[in-house]
Length: 493
Image 1 (cartoon, rainbow, N blue to C red):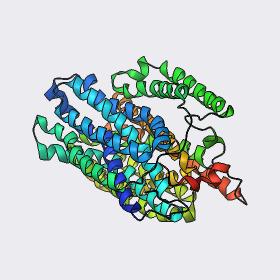
Image 2: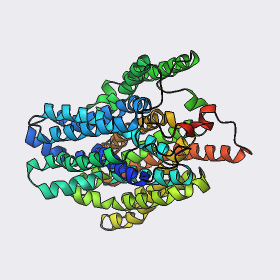
Image 3: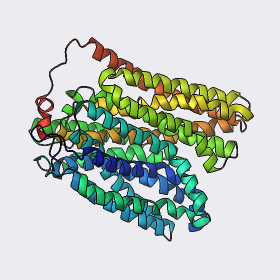
Image 4: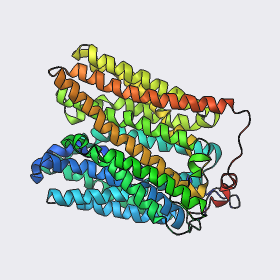
């Protein structure tokens, strides 16, 4: 059933459909971080080397990022519901394969395929919100979406710790993958009933050259980062300039495709003409450098430094997750009224909260540091909830619905790139300080979190600049024709 079109009105099942897509979104994002706590038991059970077992995490992240833009474009073209159902089926099957793997090679292959399926699912989530909701309801829906992103990233370690504690033994890691199966099957049945039907918007031939240029560029930028634990950044540094050159070539090629009237993979007017998209995508990329990296820093500090179990380590950062979840839901109701100011306030709170946590963990006595950091992490979490979902809403609100999948895929590609940089760089800073100070974990956590705050200040500057630009605009500028009439496509996909 088409939803949200000007002629038929909103689909009465849209909130139930949203709930299903958010459960799936939570599951695929959780799988980015949940596996990390189980790596030691996987390594022992499968007799794997550290480099091999690291691919269980990094391989998923890599193929996830590589799939996003192409999957978003395919969802726009042939139907988001169709892509969602096929990708969810694949995700369930490859989760079963990962849980049943008898060798490290089979496990890595299953994780690579699982990452592709996850990358195909992710852009359909934001595109379906664009399709099914309008006005203030869209802000609320993105609020729930932002809460899902924030919670899934924050609770991965604690969820993995709980599953390992309940399953027990060296085989307990398999349940981290098997738990996806019943959840995924239930979501598949409900999605088939609730997601809006549609054939997709009429599109031209697929831009294969753009696919190759973007895929190769993203791969070369991410591969050294996902190999950071084994010296990938130092060994493969040459991939960064080559990857950057390919991404520049991709941008030039897309302009050429659009100029001759063909259908590009990622329309240049999303960047040049769609209000708020370019700064919002840049803000998301920079923000996720700090946001994604701090979880590994906390895990290193609490587990290796203080000797906490994975479960205890996860519990220590729970205040951040709780604050983020609650604030994201509230932010969905405020974003229509406050606009970009909400992200400015949120980033200020994240900077204050993480700065305070860095100082407390670094300089307070170990006996009180963890307890004293709880209010600081709560403030940082509340701020994060005011950043992620409002930024998604402000970034995508003027995107034509028929291009929502590609736009959402590009936005999430930036987030995944930022996350890869953060998860490689911040633990690297932690270890560098640790070795240079003779094992001073207090100094290491303070400097590493300080590096995250430095990145967040860049995101803060972008948000302030965009807020001031909005404030100077006495009247809204002219929208591109597709934006002005994008609602006519709301029922497609």
